[in-house]
Length: 118
Image (cartoon, rainbow, N blue to C red):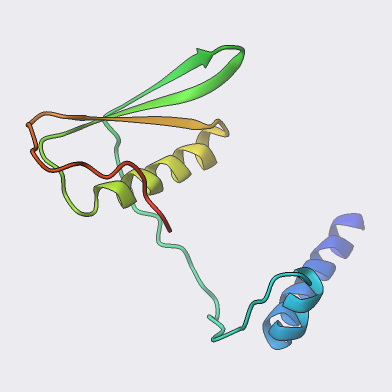
């Protein structure tokens, strides 16, 4: 019975968030100046089947992490974004924070990116 009520409540909130997006955002995030510019209907995430090079469970101090090591022959423009996606998918699947280490196999004269910003 409780699960059914939660499911109904979930559906009602989704309808309100979709049909009254501006009001819902003002209620949910009152101090954030957001403007709705579009609503995307029935978004399904296309999660690619990917394989990473190596993942190890490690302890750093007293906390457990996944250590993701990725070997890369040369830098490609999509590499930072790909590592971001891998990290998110690993965190989701394994429920542990991820430390990613990229090991480049070829020398590069220009600097490599040190972060990825969404």
